[in-house]
Image (cartoon, rainbow, N blue to C red; front, side, top):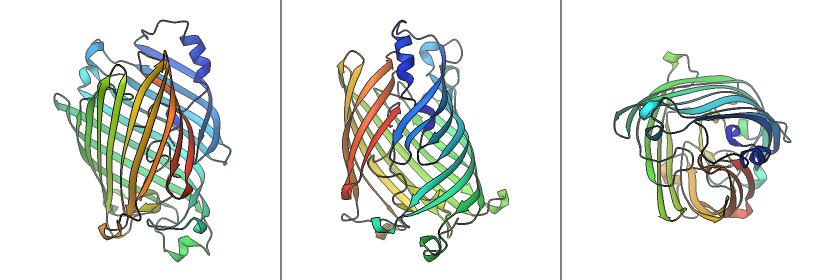
Length: 359
């Protein structure tokens, strides 16, 4: 759940912004109520803040930064408190992604692997403290080398002791922490980090979690994220993404397993409906303007999870299709409210109300 960009009550702000020029000031901050909808949360409400700004004097050469935070409670009794953001330093010489958050969640669990039946559903609750930082240095135009650190502390976890957690010997079913460090290689030629209309984003990350760092589990994670944005006419964009994550090690804890679903990947599936040591997905969107601030999208995607390569297959592949509407809160900053409806394999479906594009 991406609570940093989710307030549909930005509509209140829209009434204010329409009275202003679309040439947004270089810094803009708003604080407002939250109202959102996702398959994993039901309705969410609370308070959120969003700040967009450009660092330094080189406005035309520096991408827009965003910092956002929220205090949110959902109809499924989930609590989130956190702050996260993406900062672009002058002339994009450095990029910084970060998050500090607390979650107290009930969550659905169907077991491990890509063939878990709907009838296996169990509910568990966890309490999580999370801290992540990813600093990237531009070595040459659009090319970055980065350092990343991540800490996750599962302080409490409650589950059915006669259910799947014990039957499948799920790692991470007791309180634990993971601490990892690693590096990244990134090529980022997007014209906007949040709603690009042209360019690409290609990133490889490797994180190592080690007992030498006081991590309770020792494993490595490789993540490959490839995105391409193609403008094909006035205001029309084709957006493409291919994503792959793989964990290497004997024991991978529950909250570090690879997955997809939710508001940003293969919409229509509950995020974490399928979990495994590795996962891939590919998705695309066709984005078109309709009238003034209104736009529409059509999207589709395929993906799967596995514990090893032999688990993949055509029959187990997951897919979803859907469409949605967009409303530009501010056209200059490409900040959109989005409403998406998705239909996925085996009768899965989802309705999503959020801020910002899915990728």
